[in-house]
Length: 606
Image (cartoon, rainbow, N blue to C red):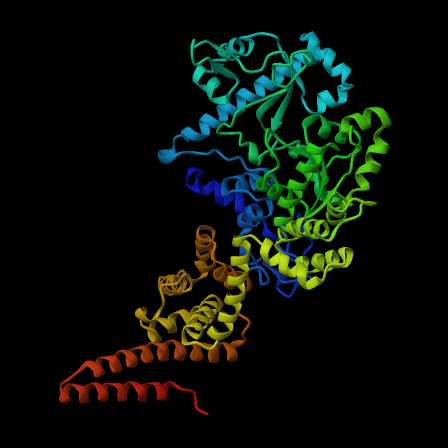
């Protein structure tokens, strides 16, 4: 993707985006010698393991293994792709991005998307003007009936689509958009039988749907004719190259700072609920757009805060949707709570009837998810038979099983056992059944990995990998080690791992007089491959003085040479077993003896 942006522009963005300044805009950093440390923003920890190296413009976390340059940090923190992260940094640094396709021409895909963005903005202005001017009478009456004030209309650019079959079609044609572009955007439709083309949105209150950058990517149209039972209550834009329903949250562009500042998001059911929340001073409210709440949407919210309040209608459908949202949030280790609304109420009705203060008080009184679940599954005042109690406890365990953190699972299991008088061992047994296969497999693999790591720590392969990592650290510390390595280690003794390839790059660049450029070259390599080991080495560097560095170098070279000699001896032993000729066997034995003496000569003196 980056190849469609001129390299010099990417360089300018990075040059104007000091990693310390950028990261400090998200989390506080503390100086620790020549680097900076912090609590990692990507996982929960009590002791800082997040390292930032200002000299090399790299970060690395010893706890979760994430690391990279300033672009990678923004990608991780904002859950963004490479191009979006560059845009965020470019906006921050005031750098313009003239994207280009192969051969220096404007990218066809980008040009197509730009036209769709522009089309949607022009339609937003058209619809908004209709509502402000009172031109579409039925929609204006409906907005007045729902007490949608002028402040809300302006803040959310609400609009009105005329009661016409072709007003949008004619408007966009005059602005020289093609029918294919209009069909792709979903603004117009084609009747499959007659071939007739007509507007999608007719006589509706229009809610522009914006992405996180504030660009209009689609529309949602609310019917204003309550008597039209046959018509759809809401009509939404289809998915297009700029609109993916499962990744869009209504009002996210307005709510992101509120979510950051308050430490939690409020997930509502629809646009009018969100507008009511914002009008009531709850500026961290969002809603799924044209689809049920998704894991992708939860992932977007988690970038800004780990807590989320679910605020759906108080009816049965709302309760079911809330329970499903809880499952999704728990699976991402987010902390859900539920805003409990009266059965026949929603945020909009509460705001209009009782005012902003009452609405804020209800939101602030959100119930932690576990208490909400217990209230739903174990209604107060009801007597349970042993079978019913077992079934209800199993239902709650279903949600606990969704939690990714084993520590949290164990904590809630204990609370469930205490509240239900079901033995904790029984709850754990139920959890083991409920844990989905993927999560269970991941946990087993994680345990196996930890056990394997303990065994591998003393294996020759592990020592080889560690030796190469230390040698790369030393290469970055001083060019002398690169030059010595060119003489002491044949190229075939360096592995083909990412670290081995980085060593080869470092040695080659040093011999060409380019040692100072190694960190930048490795940073570019990390940006492409996102290798956590390379991230750590480049971001943290070597922790040696002159004496210990020389000793470490000798030990590592010895380890690598001995590893390859041992492999050669093993190969000769196998060859000797199949060799029938006595003379050939004696030659093999002699060769093995020489290799063993070489190894002995390499060993450090006791």
